[in-house]
Image (tube, rainbow, N blue to C red; front, side, top):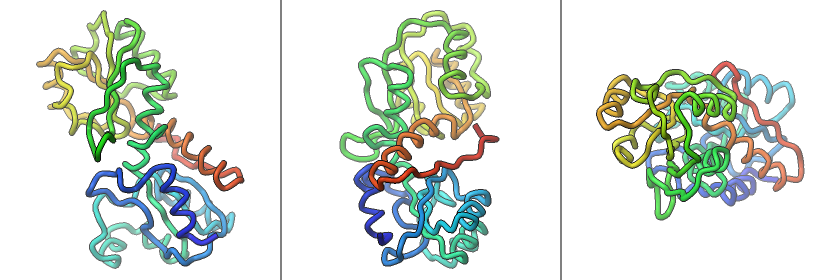
Length: 254
């Protein structure tokens, strides 16, 4: 199989055209004409994945995160920014990134969270393209903040990093919203529309803003909201390739 053929298969699972306009998806390192000799799915382009590829003679990585979140203007310039990218390049390892294309895709990271928490009357926000968006908002059976905290930690196999003050006293939570990864750029879009917002990378000022609007905010580790969807993706690509593909992620960051 050529890399270009693998790209077509990946694109069927999470169409690249649905990603954020400034995101780096599809083939980042390598060439479409290269022959694929082994595939691994990795959450990040890190040293552990590189060593795994070398050890197992794998030359193609489907990575969730790109090395840096900005478009390559110049290959040499970008490789200078990311030493790890340069190492993948030197080892002739092809890298395909799926990032926000996977977030918004059918049964992708956002949909997986909605199903995991049994959301009802689901609406999409954080629109990336027509009818596609990175956020999910929906209704849940009424719960208080203590119970929801326990549910979050159990379902995402993680610990709540921190919350805003308002969340700690919530007794009648009936709706929640998710953005996988880092989602505070969409917080203002849902102010006053949901009881609790769950995402990663929340700043002090976002917590204060949510307090002001009487909305709970729960911060979990960045990748914890992405891992369930990435496991789904790995199952899909394994089925498409008719072979079991390994999914790698750094458990330290869960």
